[in-house]
Amino acid sequence: MIPAIPGYSVEAWKSFVFNPGRLRRMQEGAGIILDFLQLVLGQGLLASELLSEDNLKELSTRLVDTQIPGAARKIKSFARYELNPETLPMFRFELRYLGNLAHMLMGFEQLSLSAKLQVWQICGGLISKELVLNQPGVNDRWVTKSVVVAREDGLVTRKTWFYGTHTLMWAFTLDYSFGTQPLPEGNKVGDTFNGTAKFYPGLLPGRILFTEKAEDSGVYRTPDVMRFEDIARLKLGVARLAAHDPLFHEYPVLMDKIILASNNGQFYLVDVNNEFLPLITVEKRGYGSKDDAWERFADAGGHPVSLWIMVSQGQFILI
View 1 (cartoon, rainbow, N blue to C red):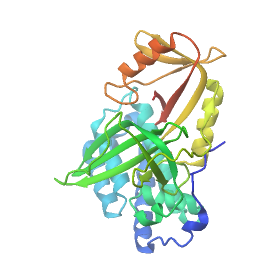
View 2: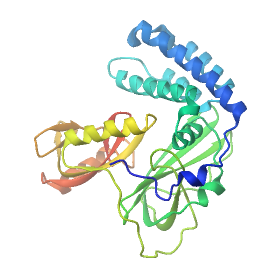
View 3: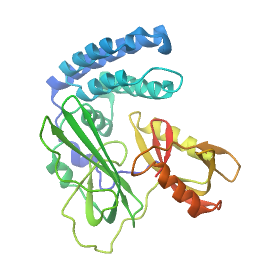
View 4: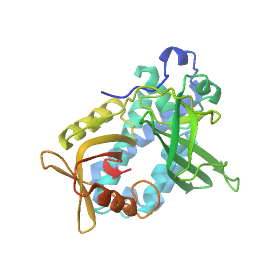
């Protein structure tokens, strides 16, 4: 079952107005993306000269002019990576993502309101904070699990993931700054606090705003998470997520009765059917770190446990 967004009601957003002028510009950008993808895939991804740094910068500039800054930054970021068999899965995922975004923009009027709101936000369209804060929220004791700061062309973005210890919910905040402007004060990994999370509209629960960090009321919503006991069902669940939200980038799922195994520093999940799934680990603090994986491996001691996994860009990360 696809988790619902807590407190989200389509009725509450029916009066939202999408700027028609901006939408037309974004649809022009969608056409540029689709033409680019057709040329790249026609040449063959590994052989395509269209992924050169100069071409990517030129395309990025054109997309900024059509008011799709997120897509522009994503395309420009490709220049940081060498295209080879190792990075090929990442390129495929991101190009598929851009294709889905472009097709949804071109068919914007046929989308559900939830999908329209999702696309609008991804393209940089504004959603009033007041509208978000007017929605019912989720009260919990939250733990800060990850803080990732990215910089691109004068824009600094901070994505912070939180875990609700009673509701078992995951949610994230996004903060931005431009130029030399500092980011607003944020949380550090390991910080815990009581608070109410108000969710942005869309197709999947994810981005939130916190209201004042209120005292613990002791009243929590029923957990509503995606959980699986074997890898085959996990992969089927991920496919359903992608069908429900073609733009989903990362999403947490819970694996029950799973064994965490290691071989030559590579970590795997092993299920009751002896199927295995490789995990991605990274050299950083927060979720997905090798140090955290080794600690979990030692604690589990080869016994079946419950583990949270982040599905990210088609890969699986221990969180």
